Image (cartoon, rainbow, N blue to C red; front, side):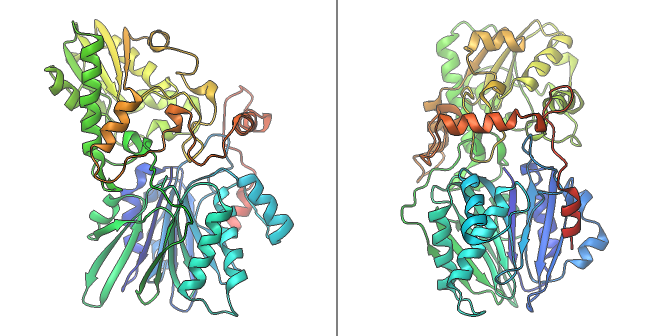
Length: 511
């Protein structure tokens, strides 16, 4: 679940990219990178581990010259290579000099990597599927380019072949040195991508981003979402070209974007994230009214920040007081996307602190966006009890997460998911709550669909076990779980950690 950004402007883009990545920081906190391009084809890159504000200093920004560029913030997955080795964008020098950043996950990454070696004669230096995707795109461009000349038809034909070869979820921004910016989205529209424009006296500037909030905060006006399977090509001079490059596109965005990942002030695929979360609160309240008609609840308290809208609407719907019972430390990252169970558990107490007066002697209903591993939930329930709560109920705006998510979210093993093999009573006992309430899947889909006038289907695999790309079977799930549990991805205590195999290579590649 990374954040991507691409800009074609009339003035230097380094500050625009930096500001845009700051807004998308919630989508990834492990690493950040920017590449800019001059009209003569010279590329300038800087990337590193950490937050955007820490990776880019004044001296780095001054070196990022050019009116075209892309940026990326990386979301870490447990057991992956070091953040520096896999920081994006990635670069290849053949056929034209291409840099690419990617949000999502390729489900046929292993086969693609083998094809690169055996057929396409290209070397993949990291375990990142984004590097594989870059090389597929570069290879297909090379097959079609006549000499060193490119045109929109050539680029769109290459993207069409990428769609045919690549499976999974991907939203992509890339720069072709000397030509311009390319962006495209997987044929199912699983990962989000929007395009906006800004009119200046010198001409129109364009930006593509993971979420509309990146456009809003920088002064760009949203044009539309990039359609599933569609490719966008914007030349260095600012000419916009687009084409549908998939044989069978369909719109089925990842529903977990609206549950947790996206900012509430974003609009993606025509859906207001905020409105979707309000609807989740309404639907969850209706279920609670059915299953617990005699409610013994004094106050509704959200787990900040993503559950606030749902909790507020739930409280209003049930006629219960809504209170802010936890204060969040803004300088601690999002615990769900932190690598390693131990790190997540420690950060919960650093991130949240209860306000005792809201808990003492009360029966409280805590509302969160979802319950995944249960680590955070268990710590929060314990904090509520320590603050004096008499009873602690826990409600999830999402259904039980029971299946691995293979399209870009770090939920790769069933044994890590608290809902695997447990019902609501077991989960309540596991996290120390008096009772747990989950949203029904049909109600979640309805909540998000009701905020839209065009989306009726969603990617819901982590809740339903239905994988929309049709290529995920038990053998695939067993393989990724075995790989995650291999000795190379464990430390001496058996806990997941990030490997540090390619740091030297990554450092050499920084420009």
